[in-house]
Length: 292
Image (tube, rainbow, N blue to C red; front, side):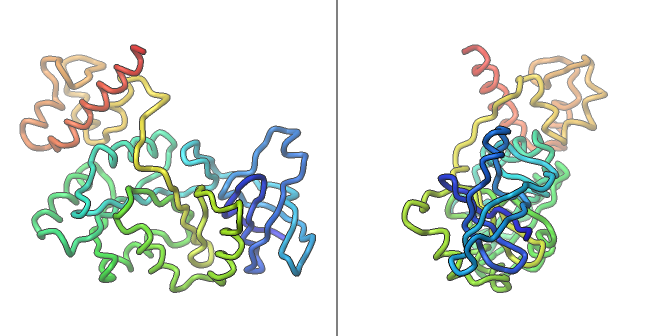
């Protein structure tokens, strides 16, 4: 029988199987021998060992479409980044870190600004425009009131989506709303996943409907960019790309160089000052890190 790993803790893997049940499985020793570790999000084949207790064994891992390093998850189609417009105010530096991290791993991102009911219309438009001008899809929403939920559902449909964002922005509210149509017994999930020693918070996959999965990723409140040199950072700011060919110097960092077309676009209001300030902050962070 085939299924998807929705959680993995302490050597146990919880498989959402094609029969709609969740099986608690151990992985065969062969994976350890080959040094190949199953990941949350992996599509697998299992052998059922105890039908009544819903226990089984993972016998093979189907080919992965991709696998992320942070969070450690396989077969992801996109990232859905939720930030509140107010309460808490958006942490743009954190949002930009998320976006860069996903771009590094070739995962497209969709941004949702939630709690639209708390923000003035002008502020809503300003927030959306900053990131739409960079080429990202942005959804303004008030998940509490059901505003934007249909659009979000459409974006998530038939995909496996990493959902990320700081606490208090509405991630849980969204998951609960989408689970109106959940295709399994939530009581059964709770029973399986919250048993004794298995209460640790790890990434987990939440089935929403057929072929639609959310990957809940705890611990994303502080992120630091790694595996990147400061001179590579500009490649992850898509709004710079169209101006770069007009810079006087090839390899322009868009900081102190004369004749910089990016800084000219900034002074003309074509590039967001906020995004540019974050670029400078991240550039300094990467430069500092390399010194040590």
